[in-house]
Length: 178
Image (cartoon, rainbow, N blue to C red):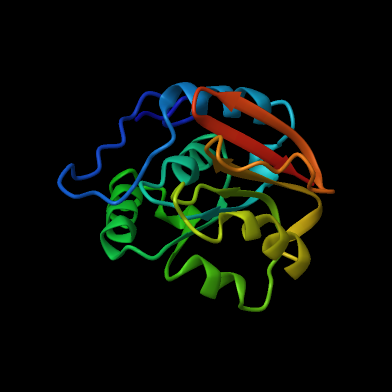
C-alpha cells in the first residue's frame, strides 16, 4: 500500500504482517476512488470520518492531500496503535483523532457532521447492509457531504433511495451515498 498523491506521495504503509485483521483497499481500487474524489472534494476544507479504519490507508491519503480534520475509528487496538505510530512518525498526528472503539458504538454517540465518510467494513460483517441507513439517518453526513461504502459483489445497494452511484473494480465495489 502506498500514498497516491499529495505531500506524502509515494510513502509506503507497512502494517505488521502477522495475523493482521484487515483487508486494505487495493492500490488499484484506491487510486480509482481518489481519481473520482479529487474532482468532488476540496481536501483542505474537508472533515473526514474513516470507519473500520484498519491500516489507516484512507485517513493517511486524505491527510496527504491536505485534510487536517480526520477521525479514524477501529476496534482493533493494534490497528489504532499502528496508525498512531505512523502519524507521529510522519509528523501528521495533529490532523487525526484516533478512536479505538466499535464502529456501531461510535455511531450510537451524538452525531458530528462530516463532509466525507469512508466505511470499509469487513466484507463478511453481518450488519454491512445497515451501515448507510445508520450513518444517513443519525446525522453524521453533512448536507453536501457523501458516504462511500466499500463492499464486495454480495451486497447490492442499487435500490437504496440515497445511492448516487456505484463503481466496480474487480471484487471491490464503492457505493456512493448522498
